[in-house]
Length: 136
Length: 120
Image (cartoon, rainbow over all chains, first blue to last red; front, side, top):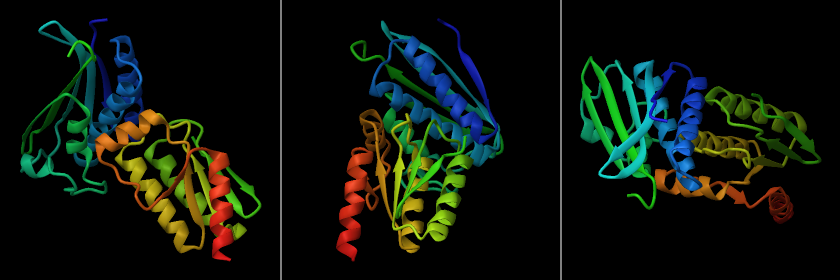
């Protein structure tokens, strides 16, 4: 129950695997209904970002516990080029890739907590959490 | 996993059976574009009932399919978006504004019948 699952993200098939793994973990942690869809969607956006901008990386999903609340924590890590201007990357509609530019800001809206750190030429880490309703 | 496309009179019906990878989605686009020309189809129904996630890539791809096939003279309607998926799409901020949608296959068919009657 307390384990963290790691999915290596290299291909578009891994995007599916990452979000399906996330959904399974979320279910076990007590999430239901639209929360499961919301969490899988956020994971999908981060996984695709990894492929698109870094080439490869990983997504780790596991439980989050804080002040008596329980939830899910998703950590997306890559050692890609990094993000030069995080504020700009978090803006809706901003994209240097082929997407809608919704990946990061969209994922932030879907989750309860969202933190991003990035260093140019080193990589990017996104940590996001969602709390089980009634505990948050 | 390839999406089966059924030819039904003037329409093409694509029933997505399970989660699609990005390349499956692009294959669906190419297949529909080919078949619209081959069968001179007037309408396309894409059934997304089986999709449990519609992220920004899927939304953008479906929007592109609708627009590309419209340029070839076919009207697309998206059917079966699940309530949880609709909820997540709104939070994510994806836009399918210009894409026709209907509750299910039946509603999608009557939408196309009406639309094509109006166009004649």
